[in-house]
Length: 226
Image (tube, helix red, strand yellow):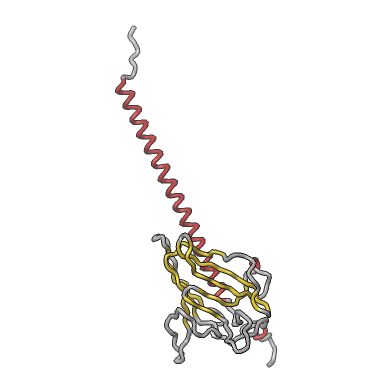
């Protein structure tokens, strides 16, 4: 009767080496897949945040009202729109889910945070006595920026568009165009240049509590005679 032949030591070692190599390849593939999935999810979140920030900025700037951000004292100039490279301040309605109705003084600031530059947003209810103190801390709309700056544009005396201005020198009016240029610290992230045309650009100033030019009382009803 012949004896059963077992595996030699070399065969066992070869099988162990092959098994270890297979497991290493499997774990490497799993790790790479996990990293790729995480990177894709992070990119998706960044893109969604970017779209939300741009959409919010666009809606609020388009709705800018020709109303003073504060009740001026005697002899003071009315400030309807304030623009600097790191600041925008104006009056506009807020989305219903974020407000109690009425106009709000809205402030967008570019500040340095732990992860680089960021865009913060603050809103204050505007009353005949002036803006009410904000009830919450400024919200961070976007962060992780390496560079960011606001600028505005209007029409010159000749009716032609001016150059982009970092400082708005006509605070009693809303500019024709507002731009935000930004660059993320992450090289793969991109910020499409945002240019917004406020609907009431260069409109006359309205008094606090009044409906600005372009409001309901300026729209004639069918058959209405003036």
